[in-house]
Image 1 (cartoon, rainbow, N blue to C red):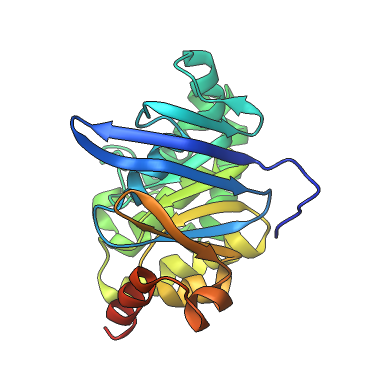
Image 2: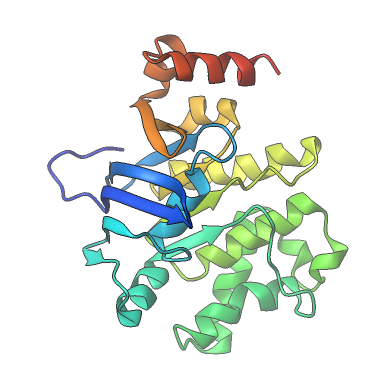
Length: 250
């Protein structure tokens, strides 16, 4: 939930990004407070994924400023590494290592990056697989799991680094419809536990239930933002109204 008295955990000021001549982010400004759940939505190609990928420097931006947990994102590799320790990321594709078991996928980063003992990492890994509802899959390989199960492993893997912020880039868009709910249920539980989350998604039911604020991106800009109540019952901008009318009728 939002706490106006505290420093924001993420600040983006006048962020601009180009791919060649294509201006993908245009003066994007956003503040996110600790424990807030932010849903970013909008049409394909509107800059949503580029923006959250800039937050942990998977992509570079050309001007403006992003500060994450007091650390400014610069080209200094030490800053980038510190920010990546604090931010977990879950992608559209699960990006699991196919030759490692589920548990090995989850504990790899804590052992290699945080230098935990294998025993300590394994204990946490088993707890996280329990938390995402698939403790019995620990010894299987990713290829033996459904898409929904693989995405839940990816969430457990991100949580294994004990991040302060979780970034989700369309985490359900590659899933079959019957698997979407199991992933959203895990994300809902995570949101209710107080995790700071930025979620790029078209899942408006999830947004309505869980988001503190929503940001509508179109053509590289934030067109409108507000609470789910504001956005769903009283959108101000014509572009927002049009997008919602198209997405909510499907």
